[in-house]
Image (tube, rainbow, N blue to C red; front, side):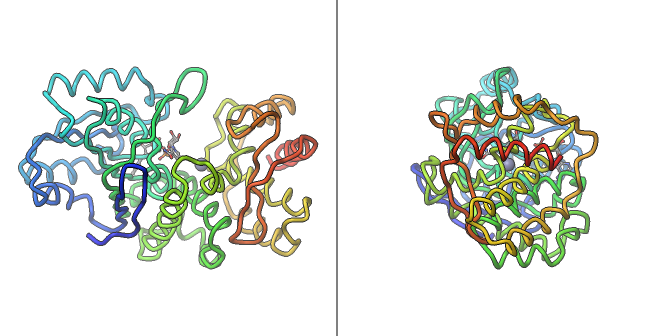
Length: 364
Ligand SMILES: NC(=O)c1ccc[n+]([C@@H]2O[C@H](COP(=O)([O-])OP(=O)(O)OC[C@H]3O[C@@H](n4cnc5c(N)ncnc54)[C@H](O)[C@@H]3O)[C@@H](O)[C@H]2O)c1
Ligand SMILES: [Zn+2]
């Protein structure tokens, strides 16, 4: 298995592998490494139905008897209550810290599985096996694991880097287009702030990536986006500087999700709206020239528009943006675009926040 990128973290280096058919190589790979312990697979019902047979049969034929820990698909499963059930299952099955937990699914499964791995016996072996586009290019890379609290998302968690990220793009064949668009929002995001050539490549046929078959081009796009994220988090694991760039479009994006109660806006739709706001504001602030602004907006306009969203109250949206964890002492740390392919973090004065809120409401 070739390595697409390496991530440097405080606890060492780990590889990110992007390719086709990697799922069936996991069992034999563990066997070749001489691993003789137990394997737990954290996943969700949809992923298990589509990809469980491939993964589990290969683990079994490599001589393992995986313990399957499955959740109901969706964010509501990402809780300490689920973790509690999984801790119990692991204890009953006699797992220890040298056994392996493999999180096979989207970001929900990766965050939850990682949280369980981080906390069980103060940290057991952990592999990320992402199966959504969003998880392959974003959530599985960078070591953030978490569960949600009733008072907010991702509030309880840790930095717990996996030993490996194994992204089998074949799994995207069963991923619904809406979920692919979701992941593409993060792909476009990282391209806009880091890689102008990549933006040009995405402009060529964005729709094909979301709605077409799994091609070599999709594989190359996943690999390139994953490598960009790996680079950023290697330089700044704890989000002290560079990693903040990945919040491009997320200040207003998160605020929109919170202020609309999450449904019916998907994360990708919220972030696309947030990125449009950021492009327009970057131009108004004199950071981004008009031609580049228009080019970025044209790309973002190709995402399907969210349907049936009741615009939130202006004040609720503003308060949610200020409550965003990036707000320090009333000033927002905000990601602007300097040019296509180059983002920067700046302090946003409060009157500009009002403008951003207006732009977000117009953009819905
Ligand atoms: N840790 C991080 O750095 C980080 C970064 C971004 C997002 N996240 C987290 O990731 C989560 C969102 O991730 P997500 O969008 O992958 O959501 P998800 O895990 O809920 O997956 C979305 C849907 O796709 C289904 N699915 C997954 N793989 C599939 C496949 N191959 N074929 C068919 N269906 C499949 C799932 O069952 C689910 O219904 C959020 O909880 C978010 O907080 C974490
Ligand atoms: Zn995001």
